[in-house]
Image (cartoon, rainbow, N blue to C red; front, side, top):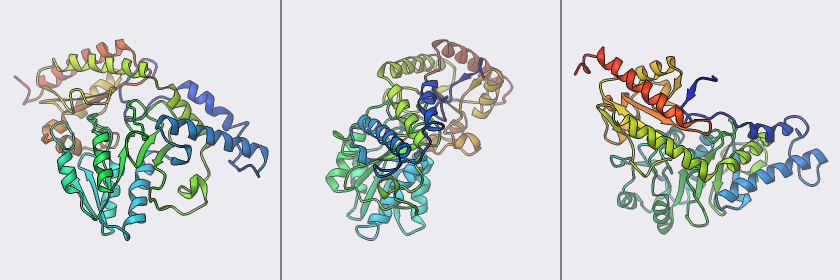
Length: 386
């Protein structure tokens, strides 16, 4: 893949060599299971590494170490948040949950699973940019509402929500608030000492960290039932042997994300946006400014996104037609439909996401390639002849 330009960093990212270097000792020399101060020396060393990784990640969130739970990734974290709260409060307070129609699948499918167990779920509509109407949220909360789950940033169109305002509404009404920050952490700062959010989903593999490790911030005192049976690891909330190499790698990946790098990704994103919106019949999906710095999603009329993807692949470029889940499906994106798009717009959407190893020259190369591909596809399409 030396000459391949990878622009699907919202699906996964290449592991940073510095992350791997930090992890390697915990596969070989320091491979023991984490044990307390009453265990043997290698286990104590592993426990210290786990504690240090936890403290580093929690600090970036403005949290205490004991408020951060390591998981296998964002899917498990969001499942734990929704189902853990439902199990803890469903019989005590109520069985009503609020989310949006454009959430990523771990939240949407968890909500639908809870509906089958007797919970009522309100799926809020969003505006044309993918933003939640705060007054609609306020009106949807009832005395039986136990949880609001609204993403910090959308996985496909990159739109940022007003997490501060949403958290304050929930806090005022005595309702727990979970946000999926999978695609924004830690590039878009979120400080729980300032924002009254109760649960936050994060992951490592989208910031050049290892796959198979993520986390859930749980504000101290938040009711959360243990939803998997097993041992007493992770403060008795998430059983199973701890992934020490993954935790160490996650912490290193978080450490390597800098404001300067994020600004560089945004500059490349803005350059590509300007170029691609000059293509006839192109349209930006998501908010023009309140969006992830590394994300660009454009719909091109009279062509199929899958055709664009395949032609770009043959030219040495990797892009996506939507979320990592939808890229394996021919179904129309629920996100594009959720912001008022039709099936044509959904099927013609392409997502470009930048990462650490992209270079400014990648922008011109992919812009030239996609302009040529679209012109060629439209030339053979009965809808694009003109």
